[in-house]
Image (cartoon, rainbow, N blue to C red; front, side, top):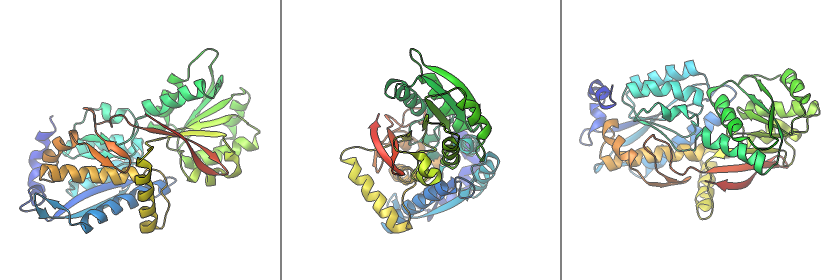
Length: 378
């Protein structure tokens, strides 16, 4: 069924919010894990969404010349697919005008079908699974590079720059973890390069002794982990306890300011290399620094990871509504497809699938327990 046909019953339900002449409130849903092991990231995202909404309202946000009030409806998916689909339906029932979220691919991908069936637009600030846009739902967008680029870049970097030969791979069995690990494995190829072991854990595990002991026997130069920082930190500690000196590499899920705290001195200096989907260079750096300062002033917290991308996701959606002179998804969707928005995170444009064009990646390591940028690449 085509996207627009789903809007026939939905348009009646949001008649109060469809045209500017009747419009008073525009509801934007946000979903992230504000409970569970990834709650620090989910709260970071929710704070950024609220900050964007508050700033737009303070400036007197208008659509088609009429002032409207933006309202944030925030939900917790706890990084759980079942809970993610439940809150997705809750937001559909609340007749939101658009969705910003989710954080985890494992919740975002199944929820995206619910939004699609309701005729809603979803802009994700963090979903990196390639499957997300391969579904070809016309209302699905993301403002970060996907796992193919992220995992592929890390795989090439491991072989070509770090010159590793023996690699072990661990993933957390989530959509995200398996996806980024698979893309890493595809790219980590070269003369003499071997994948010496593949293991898996879970997104809530705390004991990795068995899998790390098995890996230790294979003597890898590098261990790649597909998963989140809440697991990567304890894993690094147990690697140190077992005397494993291999480098540790992973994607954006573990590439956070919090990893240094979670891993303690096991994070080492230059031992960990990770990549974040996104990043800025040059003149854009001041814009990002200004955002971080405003975020700290408003929330009392440092940016954890995806807050700037959440902020830009809200702004991109709001700008598309203004350009379309309507908050009705079917009307502002075409504007979102052709948008060129200069955000905190850089220029945001989408390809026909909803992927960001020319998405950046930032490579990081850790020095003295602090995340340290190595380079921004596109």
